[in-house]
Picture 1: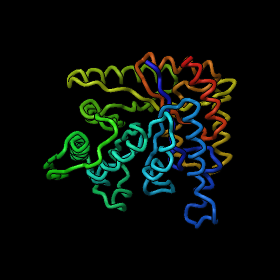
Picture 2: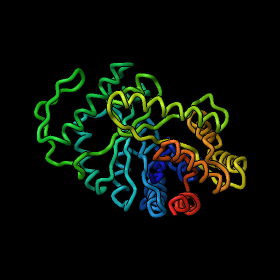
Picture 3: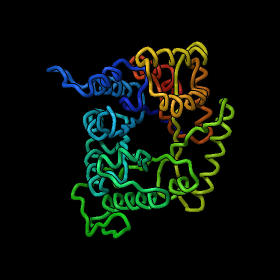
Length: 340
């Protein structure tokens, strides 16, 4: 099994320590000078084409509607058509989009990307965003049932000439897609969930599970034990349903003389370009990810990547400092040696 590597398209929600992203936020409410494109798009184009060239396998185009971020679908359509090897994983919020429309958009992008398009289902937590952009806020089991109907409709339209479904949240009568995905199976479905009900949803509906880091873990060994338990739990759930789920993880990766120096350099870069950073993003997303052990010398990082692979993880969607030099170094010192 070859370990795959991915990264986030650089947008304000997903990127830290980038002068281009800082500039994009400053300019987001202003007209741009003639002849210049948005800074986050320019960075994304340079960064992701470099990642494609040096061996990365996947890019997640996240979606934050109520924010400074460019639309994930627009970003993916503009950039991913130029990928030669990477897949485009695009975020979708059921409740904000109609599943028939997303089925058509996915088929279109899948054909543009030579069959390398996938969907990241986000059940959603940002009520203000949902209401502002025309969505319906649901909670608990009802929200999962809506998402299951959403996935059923997409897959039904991809696989059939006509598809009918009368559900509690969506009604499709003899729906058709006259443009099918490039691949017969259609795009794969990724998602993340930590609750007991959410894990059942992953086991029954999804192709990939982004396993979240345990918030209480303070050391890499504690992280590894918790992740091992999560994988074992999911294996039991998928065995009951006769399915197979593949595992992905979001570690923060930074190269340095020691793990401590790698972390210090990362923090310094974050505060250099954003003196008032989003503390929620750092505390909830970055700090747990730095405890995954993917910080230090190239040899230390490669060794930890191998541990994840041996545990059953097939994709590491890296959090990292988004600059071209860093991407090139990760490709040369981490990805390529692991595949040699």
